[in-house]
Image (cartoon, rainbow, N blue to C red; front, side, top):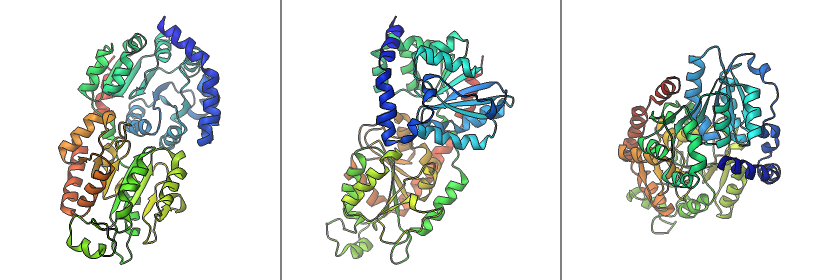
Length: 452
């Protein structure tokens, strides 16, 4: 009964969803106007891409989930050489990220958008692709999709599953809708025991703890080499290599806080507020590190121009990654480099001496610091990391990350760390050790999913 009411409400909301997709979201990101029919379960023939191979299906909603799925996709295709993979997304940026995996496995992967959670759209999805098995990354729980999979006898697993206390409380308010969906899943491979307990409390049945697949993601060697090449072009007027402070995957409102906290330092103002003696003081005062290059990488590409305007408003010298081909050689006076590119986060981490994890200064729940650790980049994390609570706590305990209270604390901590090479070197070693120690989740996840 609850699912019927949910479906009716979702159906009535379709005109609003259609308008939001084509006018609101597409205004900021025109790619939302592409493949629109797929969102209602209408798909072109896919056999030209993968032939008549039977399909396994994996859903990765956006960029982070798609990147995290890379080792799982590699392992799935290696273990099932007669199959192709259907890779679905909900965002254009996720689809663009997935295209890199398609290129890595020619003739083995077809991409599509997952339909909205309407009974008819879900039925058309399964009728068209006829997947033998489905894997959904992380937190996507859709009642009609789960019901349609069960009706067609398609085993459906939730993998790399995470559920914060905040999300669990929200789901608990609609338990009558969520519990049947969770109970229909063949298995849930949870990241941590805390995630597993919250899922069990909501009615999930078969839950196993497999760890976080993101630890198995290996940074691409060409991206690491690109980051190292950039570093040689980041020099001060006297030819010295500049320290690089990365603000990674920042969210709306965080860039202004960071720029306000860092502007004086970036402009060469010392701790006492005077620019006149900044150079002399930095040689004698360990807390006064040389002004860094701020590498600012917003989470969402549609905000690149907005963030560039914030930098300009503060009178800081800006360069944009998109204005350079290949390696970046910046003018010595550049204070902020805007990372307005896609698919280069590993290069950004590789060139950074220290990174602040975006989404953690304001209550967005943070982005994942695992990729930073895999690149050997020390990190700072703000007070809001509830989406990745266990990974963040483990990284801090391992010495790979430090907690900061707010933007001002982040600026002060960065200033001290960038003046202390020994402390940074130790954090780099701890980050790599932390990354190595947590690998193996992909193999455990596949064993759980195919145990039946």
